[in-house]
Figure (cartoon, one colour):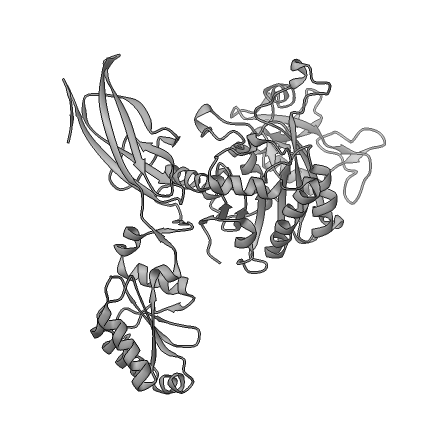
Length: 559
């Protein structure tokens, strides 16, 4: 199973490719059953198709649509795994009874969590005859209620609670509260006298004399003016208030956290869920990526992850969001689209491309780079595979490959000839006339099949969009030069959006503006040299990059 991967596609089809019991935690925030066009947020073809699919026939159809996906999620969850399903009042009762109880079993129901949304709208002010609907429901179910991972979560104490309860300080200035050391029931050595004090009448010490001695050595005892001992509980050692099933405080930390996605969830919400239901290096799955919060938080918390969405914009915005937080310790990740850019594949690292395309073909890549007879992999039936990262492959490649196949496995070579099976496969971007003719001759005259396979037969290929950027000097504002940028993109698939990095460093594209549907930005610059990068993304998820170098002083010059 590939991890740390963003996948563009219908989650049902993608889930079917994931092995049984390989995922530790699933969080999903599927489209709510509101049947309103405002649910189409990104507006690209994949999202519109998904909207039409799930709402083509009432609540029964919606439940059927979601249930078959959750059945696949149940299959891939580990016995120690759990799922958090985020929904609202439109269908939460149906989802619990008709899906989760049936798929996971009522005995594996753990919690019904009520979350007050970070932004709420109480429409009673507009005359609605109901109380404001300001909460969502999050159902927590385990794969096995005896085995599932659960790490209790805590919230910070309020300042009022601290002032009231942790109202004492020791000689080092550490805040603590003092708790009674007596107990209603005794057991063992609990009826002794401690420094002239006995427990109140009818009560016992809560700890043995040996424990009291240890508390004294550790400076854990506090004595009142009457000499009565109490046990110190230091504030800086306490985890906080245990989190229950009513969640108020999981809100956005700042305006900067928002990316412009209307139903974006706060990182604090996903941080609580991921910390609760998983440990470091576990695999987190989100089948409805949306604004990418689950993936961004999982990455920050050192978890592995898989993200799936039918929307090109959801996948690409999540990719750029990950780019914003990448550092030297971040794990690399991949993005799987419907189509691949020809130029990117054609000119990428040769060894990397060979391993990748052999895997896409369903074969096993050759990890050796020397002494391999020029072969780059084999099929699962042990037929050799050679990859040529070029176009118009000639006859000489066929001659050399034929010889390599025979030397690689002479017995298998002769067996494949006898059974009219390919003795090997050559993968390339295209083949010349000479190569095609020689393969035909070998088949007709020597009963030898060498299969020629183009890259496009394995993975769909498209041309990336074109991009042009014009700049306009708008003059000086507050001693800064104001520049207007207008980006224009063209693609047969159609343009989705633009994203901008105003401090580009040639190695990493770290967008400051994630989602620009128009392609127009203004920015203020200090005097000096600047590099600005803009990307255009089309409906297939393919992208192009344009870098603008500016020198700002008395005038603006574009290099």
